[in-house]
Image (cartoon, rainbow, N blue to C red):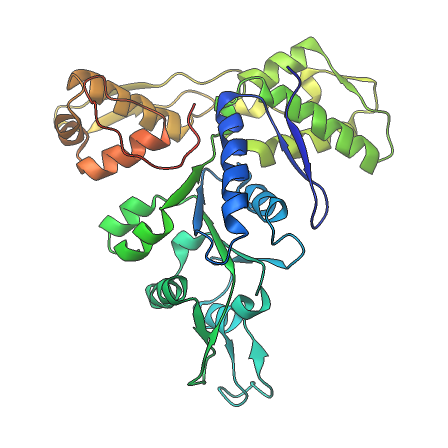
Length: 353
C-alpha cells in the first residue's frame, strides 16, 4: 500500500503522510470532524500530543476539509502572549478602553467569523481567560473589552496542547468545566517513534521538499541512514525529523545520504537502556545511560510494570505509582496501554495504535 498523502485546499498545501495504524486513525477522525465542523454549531476539538507531532497541521487540515475552508483560519499561541495582550487579541476592545486604544479593534474571535480559530497551547491559558472562553463556547457570543454589548459569533474553535490537562485540573491550574467541554472530541497524535515506517516516508518527503527549496537533486537514503532513522527515538518528533533532513540536504551535496550526514551521533544509536533501583529510604536511584533517555518511555514502562504488578487493578497500580486513578487512566490512554482485567473503557475520540 502506498503512503497516504492528502493534499488539502486552503492556505497552501497541507499534507498528512503515513500509513501506520495510529495515523490512519488520525486521518479518519480528521475527515469525520471536518464534516461536523462545517455546521452551524460545530464541536470544539482538542488536539493533544508531544511537541513537534504536528498539532497545527492537523488543525489546518480539519479547517481545509470543512465547509469553512473559504473563511479565515486564524491561529494564536496562548503561551506566547502576555495575559493582558492575549485577552485584547482574542476579544478585541473599544476605543478608549486603555491608554493606547485610539480606535476600536476587532478581536480574533470576531475576525474568524464563519471560519476557524485555532488556540494552540491552550493548557497555559490563565484562569480568568478560561472562564471567558468557556462562556464563549457555550453561548457563542463575545464581548469586547470596554463594551457592554455582546456580539454573536459563528466560529469553529480548535485547541491544542502538549500539557497534561487532567493533571493541571488536579493541581487547580485548569478549570474542570472547561476541560470536560474541550475533551468531548479529542485527537491524540502519536509520537513519531511509535509510527514505524512512517519515519522513512516522512524523511523522503522532507528530502524532496528541501531539495526543491535549495535547488538540489533529490538525494537517496543509504541503508545505514535508514536504519539510523528507525533506531533514533525522535524526542522532537516530526519537527525534529524535518530539521535533520533539511540540514542533510543543505550540507551534503552527494547523491546518497549516509548515517554520518544525519547528525544523530550526539543522541546515541538506538534507544538507551535505563537502569533504576530503589535506595534504602525508597527513593529511586537512576543510572543514566551515556546518551540520555526518553522520559516518556520511562514513564510508559513504569506504568506498564505497575499494572502488571497489580494484576490489572488500576486502583492498586495508581497507589504503587503515587498518583490518582484518574491520572493513571489519562496516562494509559496517552501511551495506548490497556489493563488486562479491565472490561470497561473510557470512550473518547482518539488516535489509537
